Length: 140
Image (cartoon, rainbow, N blue to C red):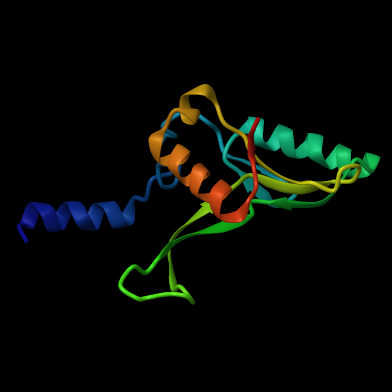
């Protein structure tokens, strides 16, 4: 290492950034928000959480779950079935899941902007979860 680089490294250790580490800007300009000890990816998602909390208090919905995870699985085609062997290749994390008290239906929600609804990888994961788990993901 050159003397200049060593001097610069030493100076940087002694003079940390007063603003702390610089966070990377969100691609869609969303601001992360913490509410009730839970981190949400946007203010809009946090607002939807507050709406759902009111519906829980009103007795319209129950079993509210924040950021439920769904395993994305594919069958192992090298084995002969049944029983089939499945491998988890990733996870899909929705924003909310709850049960409608009146109908008993389980509802999975994702807060999406028009721009993020068009992302092909999101649309593929959404279709995989809907077909695998038999749920419909509502985009709010």
